[in-house]
Image 1 (cartoon, rainbow, N blue to C red):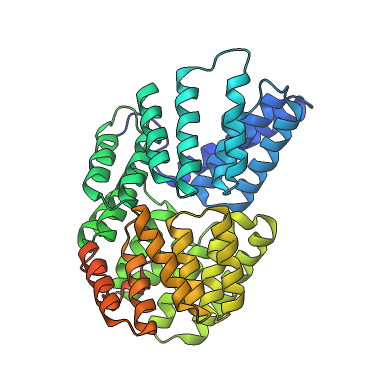
Image 2: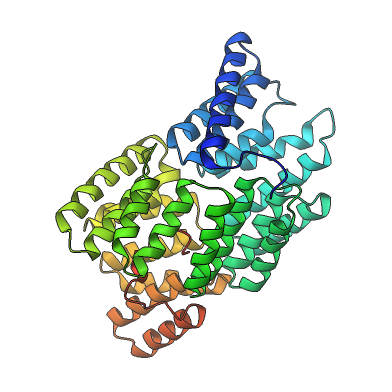
Length: 405
């Protein structure tokens, strides 16, 4: 058992509900003071992370921006604002905030310096500068080892195709039972399961997702991961039940999209279309308010709806905000949908030169080369996809919606 923290999702959410209410009261009692606003922003951010709530993330950004406006130039909510901005893909804000630390009158604590260095790594990673990102992550780890840096290092190795290194790092975190909460343990297990999913070990992935459910029961995100595993096993009744449970308590368009895909596989076209329209409306509303954060999700909805022009606009917006591997793959898919196969090929070949490795990039490249008529390129891309995951072309692979890239 983990040493501390709420034991399950309902308890954790109730704790954060109380924290948010308390911090809102502090803000109201201390008008014009930046520190209560910073604390409010962080508890809103935590609740948003737990509950998948766009409203909480947006409110957290509003609170931390107000804190920045109220704070003196040589102080203020540097790390809080950087963390919240990163969650909404506003990486420029994060970069500007951590640069402020150099001008603080009081030297930051080692833990703050390490987190700032890790955030610099995040900014570099999502800009597509992977060698720079790993230098920052390793520097952060040298200053002070933390779960956040360990997870970032694991994520870096995973996206570079080094699954064993990622497993080792996450296993180290999972083994630290004394200092991890049940929520943290479940998060580690989800990420370990994602590695197995991406490498084609679907049965192992499902076991890890089930372990996450035992570690932190009733978390909607775990239910969604388990739902997709039932779907790829063609256990559609269980998948539908889990997805419906995962949609309880908040508007979660990512789960709606997964359930719509399930309905299509079941032949329930009218139900699928109705649900996809509801999800697309939610994604589009979020793009209107926070475009960088939701362009990639709305892109998927536009592509599924057969609107290649809108899909291209959204993919380009997402790429401008975060031109890393997933952003480049989305841009290539959008180019292919518009009949620009040569451009798509150039995007994917450039991505390969950066060191990024995923089944998705090679599956898309195989489709691109097939459309161009380059059979050698298509065959090579298919081999590379299968080398990463023997399940790359499984007939149910497209029902994977969580943790698959």
